[in-house]
Length: 564
Image (tube, rainbow, N blue to C red; front, side, top):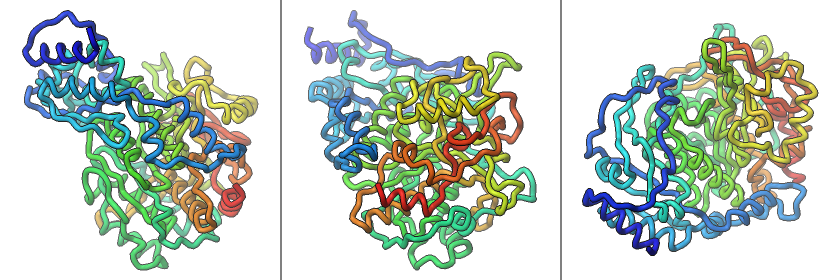
């Protein structure tokens, strides 16, 4: 039977409720037991008229070639360093085959489902359907779930099952069994005697000078917000008046909004936008905001939109991730691989992606003291993004240098997902193990996997304007936009000199480690709540999975960027 005919017959059978003997394959399923560990419980069958947004990621073309190109253009030792493809070019390279697009389109159209083939790559087909339609198409049942700890709700399908002929064209399906991240609670200082951090303090700590942004749209930066987090323009304007008083008129305005909504009031969103703009005033800044409550599907929406943007910002800062078993939030291995491949594609076009490394230290989990497991954060552990950990001033005194944060745990460790570690990091990891004297048992963590973070920045006591008032906030979600802003500043200098932006930073960072101030004090045996846990990692001389290579020495950072 021809592939298109098999797909058509199954779709018609699903629509008519007729059983047919068509070979099927289950692509992914909802791990109810894993989700239950986070407090999710089933509360009945979902109404059949509930609307779902489902994304089909189709098998991509030229993946090996894109891997080679992304590696070469981000390698300072390669002749093609910074010789990026355009985003249009990479979208064309990864485009799904016509047969794949036709097969999925036929499958959906035959069931009366509305859909759109996302251009220019046609790699993603986005469909709107009812739970009733989805149940028939994917041979599954949808239930309503509620989180007893957070009061969040979700409509979740048990599994994604497709006819085998169709599944051969599909990389992953998003929107069936994903869950939201737990609500973000910003880290607050454990003691009133904390050092206040604002853009001037950051400028002094990292000796930031020597770059004057022109406001050109050739060098733009962006923050990405998920979970319905929205920024407040009025708070941003007040922040600039209070903490960046010498900025030019208009530097406090968001250049562009992309995504679901424009303005609101979110602690995380305000922290991100105030510090990426406050540390690099004059750099045009965009806010990409997504209201969905399915983390992996929301990530895919963002990466798809980014790949479809002809002239995107040069730097993206993202303060979201999961430091635990990804199945707990309904993310499948196929979804993770699909998103990671998007990061690689984006790197081939010269866009820098920076992720916070997480606030749960070593990611320590146990069952009443047994079955100990440590988790690093994903997507921060992707090879194609740069992960940023957090520091604080020793004894809360800016004159004493920095240690790993003590208000919460600087997320770090070794990935269970991205393994083995990339070749550009292997030497740093080997040296770390020679320096570390209290490493946890290898069975507890992703020994041999990608290590995070890559670098660090201050992450405690950030002064953030929220609802017109100033509150101290902390987290690696403070460190990430800070480092992103410093990266935008050196990109500004490069662009003004006729050079390309730095793109994926990792190989460049690991080749220029003297541009960082090593952080050798502290550890990440600390939970999200600031409580000491039994296992984790230490700051040591050189790279470590707590603060990476350390914090930016901006004059050296700038010099290395201009020499590259």
